[in-house]
Image (cartoon, rainbow, N blue to C red):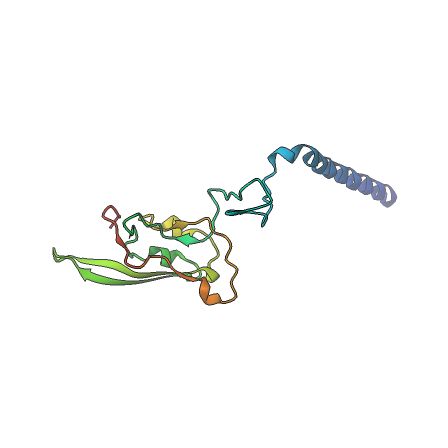
Length: 169
């Protein structure tokens, strides 16, 4: 095949490829109205549902921010082992812990502060995945725009919280 013929073959293949892509896009444009997952943000925020009839629903796998769930007695599952801080690739988790002696004479570690730097977090999930006591998880909050970066540093354990009795040692 000479260059002249190859030129027209390449043009034909390009037009055919463009038509196939446009057919897929056109089919989705016509038929996908029922399965659209795009949320009309900020019109349908949770709690500020004024113009839309829907609420903004985040998926279960959504990684919003790292949180430490507490029960109704202000107890958490974190034993202060530090594995989440070790697995964080950019150091967005700090654990300040102390060792105490129990009445039985055993040495036990308790957390004083579990600090999470949201501004440094890449939401990789290694801290949540590797936590042996399932003490931290991802929350659903996603609006974190602030003017002062210091507001992105959060203490995950609530004031006065203690480790729960059923937490893993």
